[in-house]
Length: 312
Ligand code: ING
Image (cartoon, helix red, strand yellow):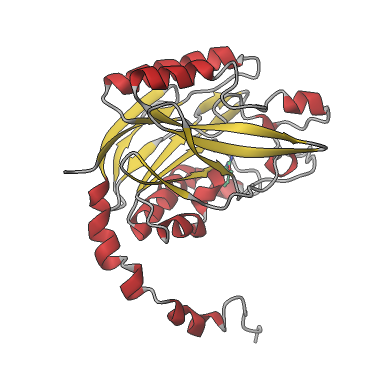
């Protein structure tokens, strides 16, 4: 019996700062209904999918900052999405800003959840690789203050048995680092779900801007192939509060091939039937970790890891 998971990559166009949670949820609901009509088992929304990408602004008022966070999930505003998922029998992945109130300590994370077809949260991930900077840098055309507004994720890179396979998550900048996929790959991941908000212009090195779309596809295709897993990357795209974000949300097979991609910068659904057994030819041959990737091989190498040879 083939293990087919039909996945909907639900790209979002810009979310205005003034857009309410209810307005955004109505967009998510429309995409979920489209996904169900297309036969999807799971619909994947972007990183921070409930609000505009607020780390682009320097803010000092904590109440203003916290207005972009969710104190509970589901919340009153997102409950309709969970209810619809249960009604339609479709799961979803959702990225959002998580505020955790614990006694005297408040913690804030860039978070993603995996929700199954019953509407139950089966997995949570908190972003580990926080890009950008922590202090106001007024010389920048726009800020990227994830290091200021979020703590580094404390849950590692877990995977879960769900949708008939082994599913993992990561968020945006995580997708650029090989360790992200490898930690999940060593746990047998077969489907990695991720969202991103990626400005076309990267202030630290504008020279990379022309390669933004290439790098986006490159890192996800490499992660898929080198770990024999499906990868689904979903953008918040378009000109959002004056900042242009890349789109090209896509679904990538374990071969490293992109099998479905969005072609607009708005709300758009790309769909693919993901046969989880297509991971087997890669996990059992070229990337058979047990046969070809022995930890002791790395003990030999590790004596030189990090030791940069002295300049002549
Ligand atoms: N955004 C970007 C990302 O990693 C970035 C940051 C942009 C890094 C361009 C490098 C180049 O896609 C988030 N939110 O991580």
